[in-house]
Image (cartoon, rainbow, N blue to C red; front, side, top):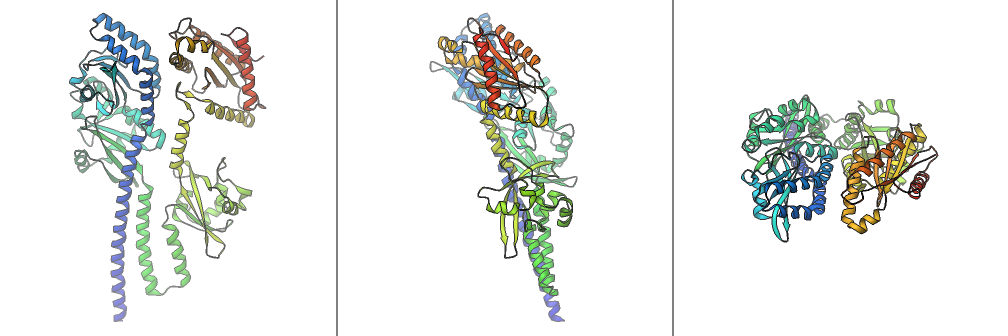
Length: 622
């Protein structure tokens, strides 16, 4: 009996020590995830600004010399002459400014070499105020005369600023800046990565700079920490409940004290039975002063899995000790071993021979919202029946009878798409196969690579844009046209019109006025036509001075009217070149038996007829 007590005490001590070790291990893992998530959040925040970097740099490349020359001319000019130059600058750059606002630009401002505002495009009547008196970044630009990027509060708006110095004949003559507000930054993050985000700024840093009416109009107090404000429209992206959600996350004086340190941190908060990981990244101004915080909120499934794994480890430790104490059967120990092995994985893991599902881990059950492998088999049969058919991914191979053999013999990566019933979205998985002893069974793991694929698709989208006109390029157009033709054949959808047009005598424009003027004409024309497009229309630069347009739901007659309207609009528009500008159009409608080549050839012939018929006209398919 003493030996039993001795063994019992020893096993209890082992249980206590093992539980403490697992708890320590869990804390280390969670701390690692928090640090990794905080660093990834910081990287995502700055990586999401790449599109804004490109837009601002392209504008600088196009207009640097012109802006510098204009600022050089205003020095010493009288008020009337300065006003005329201001109007010329506003007229010349407004199309580029307007195009940038379509991508979320909030402010464009030009100031002279002394730091006085010369022109605010967003508020052109408010000018000639001394910016350097209230803007440290402007003082820094004048002092250092180099490009600056970062956050700063202004009279009307705060946000991410791009400040460019301007030089004429080597002499500093002033600068200009682009500003992207909180709403634009958050929308770009949401577009690329999904998720929920917010930005809060110190109210003490705004009171003496931002006009009071602008604060009342655009900002509201962040209730948990009263020294901070948030942009109403930025928080409003996620609906009216988001403010309350953020207030609950930050409820507690300890977090407000953490915000006073101006350091990045992260914390876990459980709300309504869900575990949220909140990443708080400290933001600095251009001059290195505290600005505010960028906040990212996510349901961190890995942490929930670690909690579950900790419980599993503790239970398994207890069960293991009981197994030793009670000498349970070997088969039961083997089953617990397999159960422990696959349940410890964050990936979906199953044990199968390709037809019969033998076992599956907890992640699998949660993903498919079933309580057991038996329930899954009753409901779906083979897991391969849930593979979504899409080009480049493994689908249902021979009705699921030999999908395992197909993956095993496939010399490429095995990727599948399955629907996540918890998130209500499709997820992409990389499949790995490992033979389990000599039983004929395979341990198959499905690793979620959705976020990686999203990043790849983002960069693919970048490659499908024409950066001169900000329109889609030829490659994008052919993809879109191919999809519309397939829809027309498969679903018998309504009429789809195809329009091709190009600029008459464009070569003469380049020869007479230079390629820079030619590029400006292309940008001006693209912005003009795009402003008259419906949301469902698709406009692309085909190449050179040629453009293609697809109008869904438009018959031939309606498309011809639209083309004629565009022709007249272009003819009447002032493109800043003598003699004006005209375009020729060809119009057709897609047919169910069309290919990309036949549709393109037909509309090209119609455009050719318009050219031969004297140009500046619309030729429609008979």
